[in-house]
Amino acid sequence: MIHSRPGYAPRYNDQRPAKLNPDMIPAINRKSPTPTVEPKRAPEEELPLDARAEAAMKKLALEHPPVDILVNPHPSEPPKVLTPGK
Image (tube, rainbow, N blue to C red; front, top):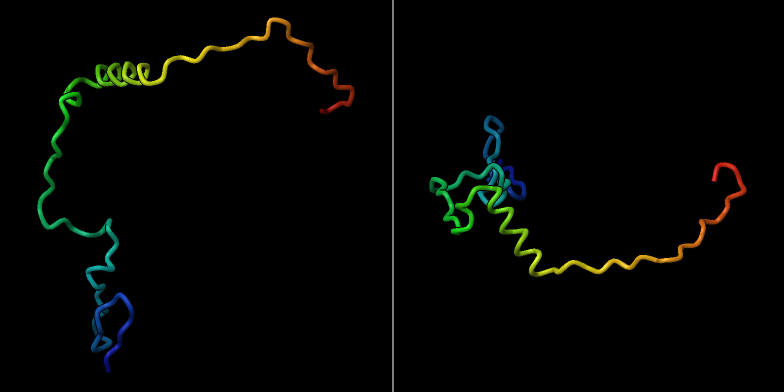
């Protein structure tokens, strides 16, 4: 008797378990067909971490200038709470 389930190869007897079809194997368990190659790095990635962080902060500062903070010159007093526990 042939046992079949979606995502599994057909099973012809009860002695061996059914194998997953290749498209149903989770990505984390798949083996890459070729050995992994180290990705090419951009020239700025060759700098030490601190220099890369400095370059990123300068770029961020150019894209987003600082915002002017408005301060109330005459702040009012906070409201009085007369109920305990609030």
